[in-house]
Length: 86
Image (cartoon, rainbow, N blue to C red):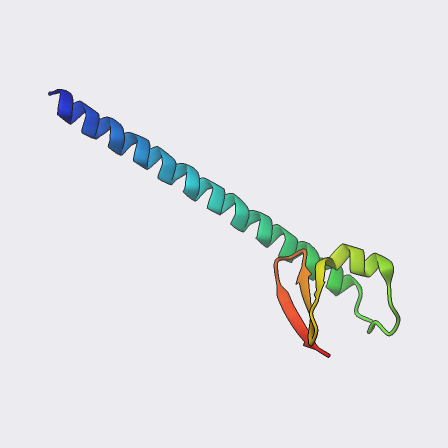
């Protein structure tokens, strides 16, 4: 009887951990979708092409820029990433 209880307790704990992981994953997915929706709405509002550097635009869209010897890597707040060869 004691072993069955231990097995069930371990399985319950494992399922709780799995549920917690799935809930966290779902929350991350919802957050990413929200950021993508905000980015899409922002871009829809600004249809004119950007011809000059805009500090506000960069701060709103770009999370991080990494400089390498041969390229720049842009990580956007939406989670998207791209590289530009130099």
